Length: 365
Image (tube, rainbow, N blue to C red; front, side):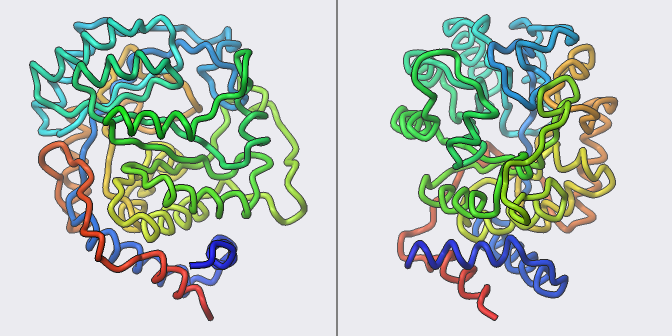
């Protein structure tokens, strides 16, 4: 299939505003989700283990330059207790997430992972940023199953503008993802929708990159800047007139649905950021437009408000038990059920029809 033609057709969908055609896209994405990963919604218990970060990312409230933020680092006992809670609630996975915190030493993370695996049997996903290959290997040997590392945008200049380097050559997150896969991890990546300077062309390339990387997990959420950051204080888009991607709910759904069509086997969450911009039913709509993962927050209450990647995050006040009861009700209302087990990616036989052809063909008028 001609890659340039793929790009043209994806661009047509990204710019599509006709309600009837978008409803057709939502239905096709939901049908593809049902065929590719089933009706189960996999629950990943999120534990935000540290808000320290050495980076100066231009949009993130955890950036090292944010002196207004009180910092924390959970201890081993607290993390394992949260993992035990995930197990008691029937979740199949815990996600250990942090800023890029060099204070989380490699051997210490390995010990925590080993304890979680031994004491709960849960799958362990790590989202700890750019670390050394030796640390990734150590954590994999300890039992970590998955690693999340967002490339954020395929536009290299834009990436470097919002992710200042730490000295030395610019980071190559695509090479890092390839190495993580070689080490035996399931790999996840993703993008933000609506970064100032992000164009429709670059988002179409992002979608193609999801497919080329053969990602096991894909995270897609709206760009929400923290006010105590350079982007939060205002930045004029560098995109040509009419080409700036808006950071609105509908655009997130379009990208999520197209990602599902291009990557039918991937695990795709309906994200907390989506619930933040639509607290009423943002997550439900994400699940109806291609999503199959929900990440309940298990971070202890004293820390949860301090993990300020962006402001006004959803689920800050609700306890894990109360959120779980409401989650079950919300899934039942959608005709979906909570998944069981780790919810790893299940690959279909190579002879299965290529969904990319289906989505790109349905773009033709």
